[in-house]
Each structure stands twice: as C-alpha cells, then as structure tokens.
Length: 261
Image (cartoon, rainbow, N blue to C red):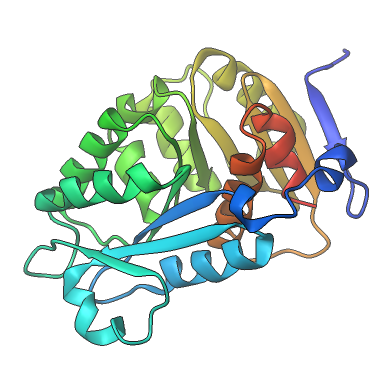
C-alpha cells in the first residue's frame, strides 16, 4: 500500500535542504521567541531551551519565570522576565497579563516545562492558549496539562506538542481515539495513527519511537532516524523546532522536519 503522506529523512540527508540555504543571516530577521517555564524547585528546562534556541539561530529570546525564582537567578539570567507566582513557586493565574504582555513582543512562544503541578498554572495555560493567536509549542509537563484537557489544543491552530509516547497515549485516550497507542506498536502503525489523527485535529506533533523522531502536520508524517538513542531529548528538540518553525511559518511540516537533521 502506497503511503504518499509518509516521508523518510536520514541522518545528514535533509528532506528540505532549501530551508537551510534560506535561513535568515540577519538577527533582526531571525525571529523572537518567548520561553515560558520553571518553578521555584526547578527551572532547568527553560534554561536549556534558551541555550538551545540561541545555538539554533534565533534572533532574540527571552525567558519568563515565576517571580519566586527571581532571588535565585535574577542576577545571572540573561534576558529574564518574571511573572506572579503561587506561594509554592509556580505560575499563578495572576501571571496571565504578564504572559500576554511578553508574548506580544514575540513571534512565537515555547512553554518549555518544569511548571510543576498546580491548578492555578493549569488555568493560566488554558487561558493563554485561548487568548493568544501566536505559534505556541509545548513540551515536558506543559503537555500534561493539555493531555488532561485536550480541547485546549485539539482545535487550536499553530500549536506544536513535543511529547513522549506515554503522553501521546494519554492524549489519544483523552481525545477518545478509536485506535489505541501502545508501546509495542511498530513504526508503520504509529505513522498511520498520526496521519489520521492530525488530519482531523489541529496540533502539530513531534514524538520519539523506536529510534526515530516523527513529525505530523495536517496528515503529513516524516520520520527521522536518530544516530543514537537519546533519553533526554524533548526540550532540545522543542527549542530547535520552535526556531525553525518561526523562521518558516508558512511551512510548518517542512521546517519541523528540517529542524531534526
């Protein structure tokens, strides 16, 4: 059976080399990315996302953290901003105005994770996704908030989920998918599932399975073979994908695929 919606990318052999040639050379044209994440007890994810985005060629990046973190990182964090937090150090509902203000500066947003589990943060994220029309990527525990309330992302355009297979499994269950996601399924069946799911739902998906990274956008799927199995991959992948996506907004499938080479 021919599957013209499935493209295969090999290490060092990009499917869309023209995107590399056409990348902005001027920082002013290379995009502005707002990175949101962290809590009082952990903020490695937004820090890693910032470093990766800079290396990947973003024009300008800012990091938005809960204000409880300011006394720890305020003097050392480059391009750091802060928003109201809960007593335990996660983003509070009151942070919405600051998140919207900071995102008005940006071309896109990466919610990088380390948010912690907090009901106020869940409300904040849901309201932000509803109010903002920007390209927004979510990874790590930011995706968990979406899998527990899938309506937030399933109908929202310009949304990227960089998630683990277990998170995709929970999203499929919450979205009442008739075909289950299993850890034992082969690559072909996951490609078919992603083709069907993203043909009917809005979010773009990047997920790792069986030594490959899969990108699914509007029913198109690409697989990129990994040179080695990475256990920690989501933040780096999400940051690079966000940069390439913002620099090629009219070509989400091509740009997300190209970011993985």
